[in-house]
Length: 238
Image (cartoon, rainbow, N blue to C red):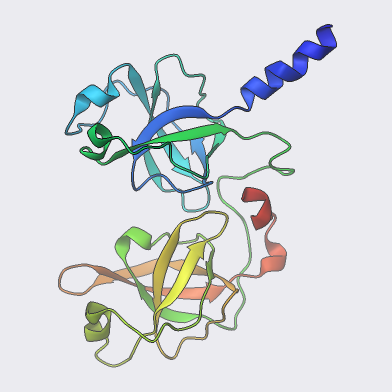
């Protein structure tokens, strides 16, 4: 009888749990790590009543290392240093009292050894190739240096007006891109002379420059990632 009770306990550990986060932090199926204990104070929101009986943790996304807030019930079993994954779907329906503060109700669960048959490092170590890549523009909110990303389309035949106007001596293309191992998708603007290929992995270098009068763009160099040196299987993170 005792042997039959253990699987039920494991199943309970793997069940999705409810939490609240900000709209920009949630990505479907995103892997994240809790990097703080419960904070002394929650950040200010327009409707603080929705966060009653919740504590707040800081989480960090895999690959991009982007930080955000996760609000969990006071009795939630969630540990600093442990890794979790968001559910593919938001809890529904979307609640008006949360939307007022830019918050969404989400579900998450712990990662297990069955999910990831390897050790998930905070920073992935890989090599870059000498050929390919070039210079590009990207929105500041989408710039994460040293984080591999995949170009998922060819040129789209359209360039935003501010990108087009910023190119005094060069033109730009618009392509779709997605950060490796995440569902964080964004528009990427390689210069016309850059070498890009759909399905290839790239990485933006640490050296970058804010440009455009409004500071709305980042100029960055990007290189091809040697995929054979990656130790993480992208499909295992989905």
